Amino acid sequence: SLLSKPALAWFPHGQSASTPAFQIITSNYSNNSWNSAPAGWQACLDRVKADLESWIANPITVTIQVSYGDVGGASLGSALGKSIYNDNISTYSALETALLAAPKDAVKISAYGAAGASLPGSSPGTMMVTTALGNALGLCAGGSPDGYAGWSSAVSVDTTVDGSSCASGHYSLYGAILHELTENLSRTSFLDSS
Image 1 (cartoon, rainbow, N blue to C red):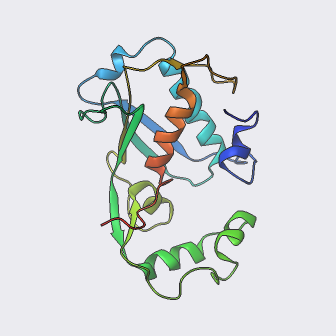
Image 2: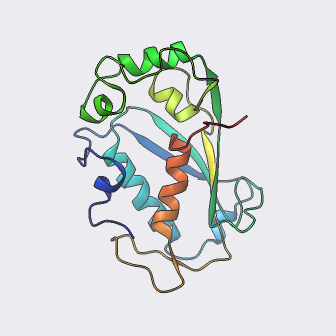
């Protein structure tokens, strides 16, 4: 279920960015599958993008190619949705320096301490970041595109965007779109991966 205040669910500060400068640009993947999505899907995608743009203040542009029934031309299998994101390998030192140089707020301080005391003293392994996150931290330029997101044509979804409950046996398209777009933004972990 979506909370009545989605910002509080995903972004603990719960405030809209005072001067939104973050932008998500979506385009139809080259197979044009998004054109066959049912009515209401574009409006739902637009609402998720608008919400994310109002919650995130980093002045970057993220580009994501969207698909209906596949992801970047690849099969979704039995998944409701999938994302494929471009990533970069970075050194731990560069990532630590970028995190510590970023402006501090209560959320960041609670995550790794005002002076980085909660960060590991040495590299815990290979550091991989999505191009969207690398761009936000100044570690790399954004990708072109930064990633791909696709949603299944084989499941029943509700396209309501007001946080109301889904009909029995349905999924929230708003939630599914939010899930895949935020994975492209780096709401994912490479821990314990090869």
